[in-house]
Length: 134
Image 1 (cartoon, one colour):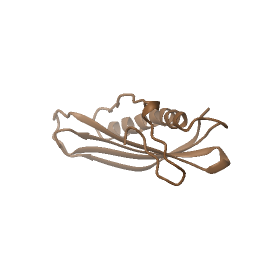
Image 2 (cartoon, rainbow, N blue to C red; image 1 turned 120 degrees about the vertical axis):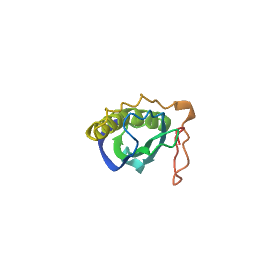
Image 3 (cartoon, rainbow, N blue to C red; image 1 turned 30 degrees about the vertical axis):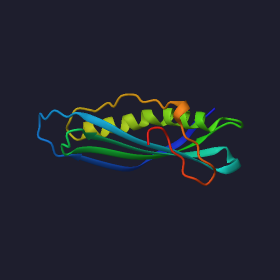
Image 4 (tube, rainbow, N blue to C red; image 1 turned 90 degrees about the vertical axis):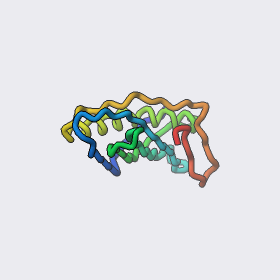
């Protein structure tokens, strides 16, 4: 079982230079990687999430987060990858909502996202890992 131990927001970039009343058509870009710490049964997730306008309006939110998780002996790495993302994602939604609401615009609630376990790529030790959202 994967368990979130702690997370932090390591970076926030927010640009909102659109005129009031401008309609935005938003798109998301996600990159999520998990690195493992040998026999410690711990891993670190690194999330880079960007919300921007499809029409290239001057609007962008980029959040970078890091988290540490524990897992049980015998847990499958693809399952750990999916479960850790699912545990971290609600905190990302909360950060984006808070940043947008404090900026004087309506709070932005991004839709829920789930990883597809079958499309998670696990590389050999020492290689950078990737997710299906990269």
